[in-house]
Image (cartoon, rainbow, N blue to C red; front, top):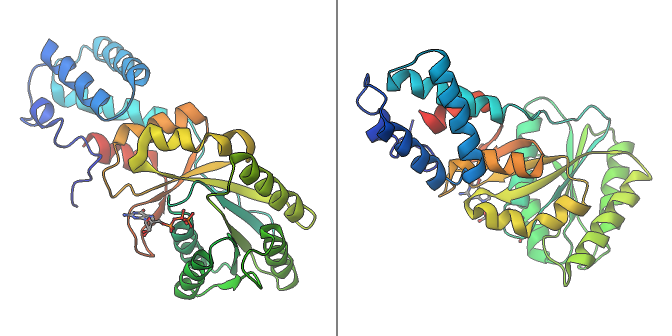
Length: 292
Ligand SMILES: Nc1nc2c(ncn2[C@@H]2O[C@H](COP(=O)(O)OP(=O)(O)OP(=O)(O)O)[C@@H](O)[C@H]2O)c(=O)[nH]1
């Protein structure tokens, strides 16, 4: 498998590259530098190192190969502190997809719809990003690729809440399992955007509970992207995160930092522009790919 940009493969090559070797002070310095430069942030770096050091002492570990395993397990345990399961037991299960523009909301919906059809789920998507005609068409293209139904606005600029309502109404009438609603990423003001999301939610809840509110984050933007998404975290009732563009120049530490700073689980991960490039989030696999 090709090495991911966020993997520590390269950074750790001089630490762990040569197989069996004694642990020295340089080893610890190199690990600290690697964690910091991978965007773990100083607090998490210190906390991770403290656990690893105490495990190393406790088990009287002297070899870097064992140290690497302890590091991998420590990162995995921290990643595992959040539940990545999508909650889709309601019928219909309604998923709202939110986030700033350009992060990959529409693409994620296409991939997710496609993924869920593999479990024999009957899916409908709703184009409640009614400000840009191109956004509606983009979602329609994805719906077509995934082979799922779509509800589009009757005219440009139609109230997004009414599109969301019609989508959920159709889901109920025609017994769809899951309705996924695309929303706008940008409005004139943040307040306006949050009001709009609030209205979408209230209108949907007249018909059915909202099962998941997924906040999509572009992993390559790191802490910066998180700051931009803060209003969603504070006001949109987010239940889980989707990290996109992990095939790009994302830094691995962000994955852990984002869960710990938002206290929200990562539920899905996008690693490419193709319809098959979406997976659930598996801490074990991620830690193994990250640390090597
Ligand atoms: N490499 C890569 N590109 C992605 C991924 N997810 C989305 N993209 C790309 O990111 C760009 C923006 O994606 P969209 O789905 O249009 O983003 P959006 O959030 O719906 O944008 P707006 O509709 O403008 O709010 C597109 O060029 C996608 O192909 C991913 O996981 N990896």
